[in-house]
Length: 322
Image (cartoon, rainbow, N blue to C red; front, side):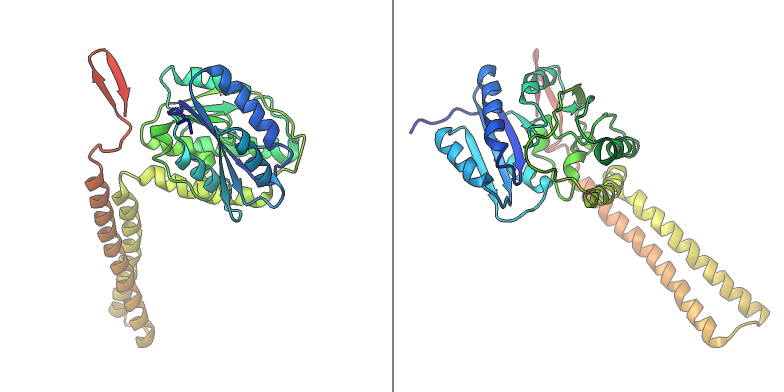
């Protein structure tokens, strides 16, 4: 059997119940990548489909060895599917996209060209989005504004799955929940250079959209987690120190209240004992938070030695990203 060359590009496509779309999409991606020249691979991740999606993908794989198929036994979500695809990808540049034919593979060459200008991530911007106004477009616009505000990453369309990444960047990021839409923010913490280009967007022709309001709730919860992560990743003592301040403040106020009651002789003994106990509990929580913060700070500092970071080494006239 002829050994395949190391791929330059890997395209990762998570799918669920897209039996009418997967073969069309594969052919379009294959046509685009075959014209780009270097070796490539296409990775479809079946996220627990209940239709014939997996059978169709297996049949395509039998004819086209450049297709890899990853099968989940049940539905784990888009972030988990993307993470599985990224783990399997061997290309220097990894492109992600949706499996519903709304993203256009014809935009891939332009994204790669933009990356060659020195960026680590290039995101797609669906400026002319072909979705329903009230159900998809308006909530998306609101969400994008909120995400830009909290993350500081100035992308117009954080929800667009069509993105290109350098392999060494995306493989450092662990995904869960709905964090796939926050990949640029997570990469920015490590110093990644991020840009965007306008991409085409098509109306869905086959199948049903997987979007619903429960996903909106998950995104909001993950955004809260991400906000804390970005703010305090390298300075956890600031977070725990803030908690300690408020715990100690409440504890001291409670103690002063106890002293006031004792001084004025206006107290019930049982109630005062409870208040004193609660005061010391607040103070203990405050000192415990400082202790946790110091430990977290030591953990961060011990791992902050530059190993595995997104750095550049300049040698002679060459610049090699690591």
